[in-house]
Length: 205
Image 1 (cartoon, rainbow, N blue to C red):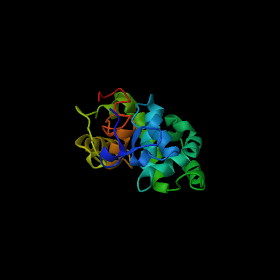
Image 2: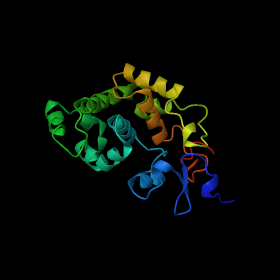
Image 3: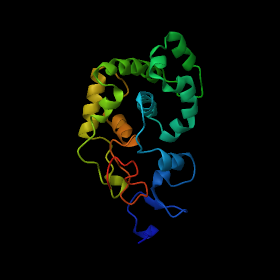
Image 4: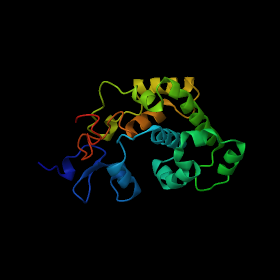
């Protein structure tokens, strides 16, 4: 039975196309497209996981919409987030990035991206970044009814953050890593009423 706009929980919206989404993805445009097609879905391969980790780090203190608008430029200047290419960046490349207004010109975050690429290389000896991140998948995922039920961190994101920092990663705090876990489907925090709930196939319902 279809739900009406009046009986939806806090933070959920019945959109003009008849689908229920969270408020942040309700308006047509970049954020809705991202929610409908990417957010919460698994990605494949080391470079894709590295990209998401780096972009979540750049997002700290900013809106995700800002990152999405700048993502094409980020992909260009970071060479499609090829780990080995970024790991080889030196002072000259970093200085060039700091002059590029199309991206976030934050020296600490740019240097962290390069350092995180080098740390990702080191992880290969123990199974690699992909297996490392997914090793923090919890036994259960949240089942939020309202937007207020959605966590911003978890014991697993705290543990992931500590483990990443220990091996040299930066801009990987617990909240940032929880956002990463949400973005790539390690947890499913789609509202229970959302048409995207369970879309990744990693979690049932």
